[in-house]
Length: 576
Image (tube, rainbow, N blue to C red):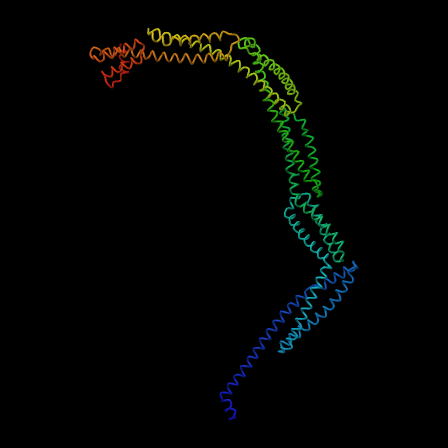
């Protein structure tokens, strides 16, 4: 005992004991960690194995066996697949055994054996998974027709469900067609059941044929569900309303006296009504082919009828107004042509209108032709058996012809008026020019100043000659208008200029005389004024009137520098 106490009391012994304990603890921890790691790996492997087992190989093989019964070409391939699946079944059994054994060994602490089993299990899983994937892909290729059909039928069922939902949401809008739609839906439901029966029997060709029937039936149903509400709205609401409106418009305008028989409104409305009844019957039976086109055609025909009736109504009003104005215009033209015809001898003699005679013949022919057209149109208006639109066209042509004739008449009248106006103007101007020349002569003679007469004597002679020329031209037949206008215009320019010159000179003379009279008051008082006035008087007598005026003004400036001499002279002349 003392020996043990002494042994354990030594530090070396204590160190050894501590080291042994630490090693034992580390070994325990290592085994625990290793055990947990192996268990986690086992759990992960088990998950993968379960996923592999979920592959429906048995279901696919059963389908393949069913396919083999109706198609012997797949017999050898299916037999090989069954043999491979039997081997897989053995592998599944071994995997199940290894899963249980490995878990027991790991839990019981036999980590070495458990790890070996786990490695075997994982290797077996990898090989088995590869074979499962290969077999599954081979079966999928073998059963691709079924897969395709299943996918198609799933999509069709989804679409069918959407169609039924859409129908139920608007069921009130389908009216009498609802019964037929539900019958079609019942037939489609039965077709889906038939498809499943063919698929169960692996009759894929017949299942495909049933799928095609379902697809066609659903396409027709989808189209019907989509368009019937709109078609019923047109067939029961819009088009009947249009028929009613056209009928009312026809009755109203027909009672107004507008000719509408050529439109055959009643016949067309009856045809549209009959066609509408047939379209409604087709909608109820879901025979929708061409229904939309027929409804659109009915709507189009009704619009055309409404437009045609409205056009006839407007044309009727236009015809009434246009006929009155056009016929009145023709009567006025006839009167003007008659007046021209009556005046033609006088006009030809006076103005030499040689071409007017030919123009007048043409105008008279046009008047006669238009008068015949007028009578024809009046007969058509009274008979009321011709559409107003046709009459409007005739009246427009008549109006255009009348306007053209009116332009011809206006051009002729303008020519006559211009000639008469030029003659009258020349006569008035001749009188004015005579008066002006008399005034010029009076102003020259009243001053008794020979220098004025000498200055303008030649101009006065020329002016009188120009007046005589105008008078001579006016006396000619036919009257030469161009020569007359040229002579009048030239005479006006020359004589008015002469008149202004004489007026200016006479005004200067009057101013000189008044200025001399005004300055004479200061002549005796201012000697320098006397000399200036003497010089001014000499210039005045010599006809130098402007110089004389300047001289007098100069003298006045000396007497009253800066004074408004013009006002002084005028005041003096008035006081005198």
